[in-house]
Image: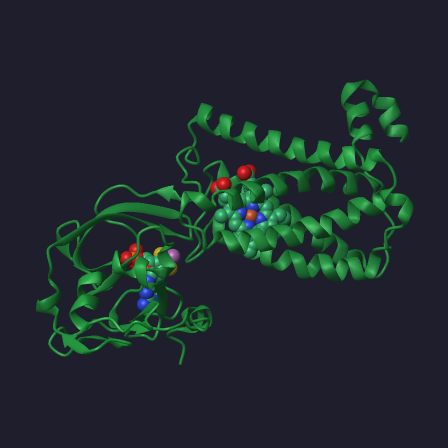
Amino acid sequence: MDRDRGRGGAIGRAVRRFEPRPRLVDWSILLLVAFELGSGLLSLTVGRPGGSAVFLLHGVAGLTLVFLLFYKLRRVRRLWDRATGLSVLTTAVALAALGSGVFWVFGGDVRILYWNALSAHVLFGLLLLPLVLVHAATRARPPRRVDFRGRRTALQYAGLLVGGALVWRAQQGVNRLLDTAGADRRFTGSKPVEGASFPVTSWVADDPDPIDPDKWRLRVGGLVDEPYELAPEDLDGADELRALLDCTSGWYTVQDWRGVLVGDLLDRAGADPAGAWVRFVSVTGYRWSLPLDEARDALLATRVGGEPLSHGHGAPLRLVAPGRRGFQWVKWVEAVEVRDRRDPAQWFVTLVSGFD
Ligand code: HEM
Ligand SMILES: Nc1nc2c(c(=O)[nH]1)N[C@H]1C(S)=C(S)[C@@H](COP(=O)(O)O)O[C@H]1N2
Ligand SMILES: [Mo]
């Protein structure tokens, strides 16, 4: 308080006016960190602009968290005890999560092996919630009725959220003005990769040997009237699709894909009325399912940009699923299965696929 009074001025007054009661600051930080983790993880599944609010809320809540951390840090006393080490670590990881998020948004990146600024951000984000929980368990006091009392608290929070939203808005403007590498991000945060060559992205261990086309067959089956198999030459179709591949590691590319429409493959097998989902399975076990109607419009591609797929991009056959994030575009597909239900195990299977 004395410090602020000394500083006086409009900023000092605004800082004091919007400062919630200390216990509320603490508990709101916990809440916002949980929200960031939830919205961050959810955002990885969003590929269509209809879901862009998830990214907006994630950004606004993250920037609001900056204000709350500011309040929190200016009141911490320099009293060392057994829990101080953890408190310092928690603060460092919180700043790293916020900093790496903002750094990425402004076009920053660093690359170390598989890692980039966005994946570091996700890692810090995952570490943060358990740290904050343990920190809270050692330090926090339950909020009291009086902490919530009054219109003042509601107005303070409204003010802080509006502040977060304004900073978010300003961030967009600054990004555009300075024309940073973050300016042409998609709403998912991914940055463009132009041209015919784009990264090969696979999960850590999902790395099969090149597939011998003479031995490989595509199986179309499940809930169909007549299951059948196709060889590579039967799949070198003329259906074309320009589609955007958006990887959750932060890049996207628009390519012309060529192959066979899944709807045509299914028509040939004859539909069972119970069919509602279509599962695409890789030779590695990696798999993803799409609702039947969406799957019909997806493509199984043998070519990209007029050239046959390379092994890394999924030869002889890979799924092209417009509007879906990259991890759902199964590579090295060997089976298309019509099913009556979704496949919750796919989340787990894709994460561990390739590990023995
Ligand atoms: C697993 C957890 C998380 C994931 C997957 C995730 C994902 C993302 C993504 C994709 C962006 C880029 C959005 C864009 O370009 O507009 C982003 C930005 C950001 N994230 Fe996270 N995040 C996670 C956790 C967190 C946590 C815990 C915090 C806060 C401590 C946080 C704070 C931020 C901030 C401040 C930004 C920048 C927003 C902006 O300036 O517009 N994130 N995050
Ligand atoms: N079988 C299999 N398919 C996969 C993957 C994988 O690891 N295994 N990676 C996915 C991810 S995360 C992305 S972004 C795209 C990348 O496709 P690309 O390597 O052709 O760029 O493939 C997806 N399909
Ligand atoms: Mo990806």
